[in-house]
Length: 427
Image 1 (cartoon, rainbow, N blue to C red):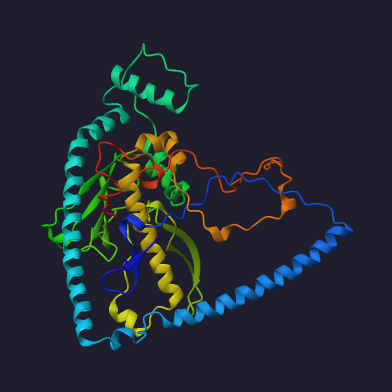
Image 2: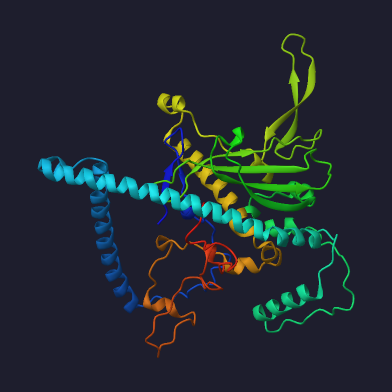
């Protein structure tokens, strides 16, 4: 179940770290279109029965909607039961609340220790990441042992894999490695435009670090930072672009760290190279002199680099004044969820398994959230697509088939060298 928690300073909600929803749609549903039988007199009688069933279903849905509407109006309101309890029972209830407070304190301590454990293992993984960067950028060549280990994994993944001859092992950079890896992440692929690709081809590495809570910039909050390393390019002057995610001081109601806010690098764009803006030429006429002139105006546009300009929660004053309607608040909440999801996916998936995203292997393990409301029962006559065996009594699942075992976070096998992701997730 997905649970949301309030963002500090407003009543907007942000996802708890480990329950951030994945809104990815399946890559391929893999469903055949059912055939439509010819209409006959017998079918017409069946259709009449179906109409009656549809009417009954509609009435049931209306009744259910009415009940749900009435229950929704009671949420948050007292039933009067607690108020009616004897004083001595009320004291017992308060005592249980006190025990819960101590439990919450221990949970907060546990998550803090998990965070320290994550930092420890990131330090152990640092040499591997440095080695990976050197091979990607062609400053070093892979060893025979590394190649052999990779080939053994390839044979596990594909029994038809043919090893590459190893007579000529030389340093060789992998072109557009990180652009390809980001493109193979379903959520990020939607954010990267064709205009962004020119800049992202200069991406040398993506690194993870944890925040120094003593720095004023981070307000004493725990959290993590994603750093993008770029080679010199014609788009911006920055060599690095950072995105920091801050947690609240204490864990939330779900027992996990709660998203507080994000801080992004101010990109120093070179002249006329701002990928987050589009320019248009407009003709203006002076009302007094009747003279005309051409004016170039900039307007915001979709770009991956908007990622470094995170959404800002509305102030308490704006909320109290009713500046935003319900639809606008929902839109702000969606932006917070998307921003946080991307940061967590970079931290938990893309950085640790960059080669799997480059090759596309990671897509086999992406978990797709199938909403039961998206499916409907098929009639008995709709199984003519050959997916059912008339002699079989077993049930056939029509949901898309998922490749790979549902282990670890996001469906990918958990890395044995890391902290148990189900126990110490910080997102």
